[in-house]
Amino acid sequence: MGVYMHFLNYLNKHFDCVTSSFFDSSITGTNNTGKDVDEIWLYEKGNDCEPLLILRDNWWYSESPNKGEYRVLNIYSTLPNGTIIQESELRSLIKKGTVKSKYN
Image (cartoon, rainbow, N blue to C red; front, side, top):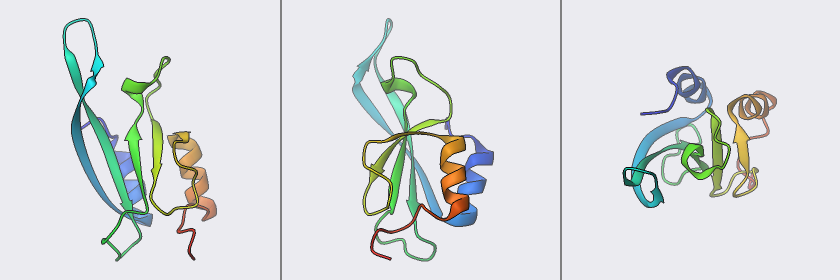
């Protein structure tokens, strides 16, 4: 999995996390048709019925890909859906306590 373990360990301190991959056939390259795309599903601690948000590795979807860059797929968090966010920026927002349910 392309997710860095230190980042996943950091996320697990604040959220319940599940990593997954899916095959996206719309991503094409010179020698193939499709890529495995990594995701991190973040749940509020102790509440695993619906994810707070999903972080999708943005590597394959960007014209200028950067490691540690994610697309936010918002379920009910305070982060805007579709936002591209760097790992460092997300860490800062988590540390400030701003990544939470918009219903709390």
